[in-house]
Amino acid sequence: MPLGIKFFIALFLVMFVGLATFTFINVKSEADDLLEQVELAALRTTDLIKESTHYSMLINRKEDIHQIFQNFSQMPGFDAIRIYDKEGEVIFTTRPEEASTRVTINSEACQVCHRYPEPLKALATKERHRIITADGHRVLALINPIENEPACYGSGCHLHPDEKFILGVLDVQMSLATVDADIASSRRQTIWASVILVISVLLVTGFLIWTLIRAPVRKLTEGTRAIAQGNLDYIIPLHRKDEIGELANSLDGLFRKALCKRGARTE
Image (cartoon, rainbow, N blue to C red):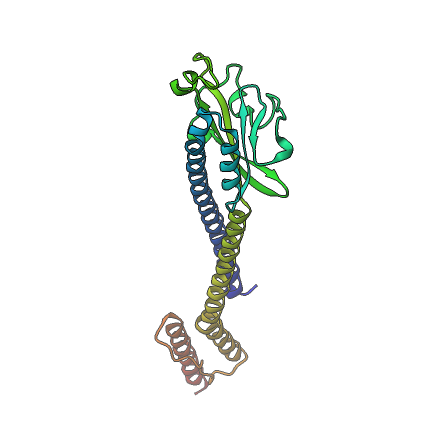
C-alpha cells in the first residue's frame, strides 16, 4: 500500500475518532444543559401553581383551584397537573377521568418519597423530578410536596392536625417533545458539521499529499528506474527547494558522477 494512502487512512481514523468523541460530548452537554434549564423552569412553575392555589385551598374553594389548574393546563407543554392527598387519592386534576382515583404506594409518583421505609419529609431539588414516557414521548414529572403550616391546621374550614408534616403532593407533568426535537436537531446539525469538516480536511489533505509527496516520489521512482535500465542521461524533472528536491538533486549528482566514471573507464 502506498505511503500516501497509509497516511490518508491514519489521518481519517484519527479525525473520525476525535470528532466522534467531540460530537458525543458536545451533544450530551447541550442536552444536559437544556434539560436542566427546563427542570428549573418547571420547578418554578410548580411553585407558582402552589402559590396561586394557596389561598383557595385555605378557604376550600375547590372550583377556584380547578379553574387555576385549567388555566395552567392551557399553556404549551403541560401534560397533566394533579394533587394527591396523603392517602394517594387524586383530589384535583386536569384530567377528569383521574378524579377521585387512588394510586398505590408503589406507583412511580409515590416512590419519589416512599422508596425508603420511612417516607421522606423533604426533597432535594434534584430528587423532585423524574422522566417518564407517555403517549410516545418523554415527560418531565415534578413532585412538589404541600407542607402543613399554621394557616392550614388553624383554619376552621378544613382543619388538619398539626402533627401532619405533609398534606399532599402537587404533581406536574410537562412534555419534553419540543425539547427532544431541539436536541435531535442540534445533534443532526453537529453531526453534519463534523462530517463536512472531515470531508473538507481529507480532500485538502489528499490534494496536498498528492501534490507534495505522491507526485514527486513517483517522479523519483521513474527516474531511478530509467537510470537502472541504463539511461544515464535521464534527469529527474524536479525543481523544488525542499527535502524531496534536495534528494532529486543528490540522485542526479550521483548519477552524473556514475556517468563520468563510466566515460573515463571507456576512454
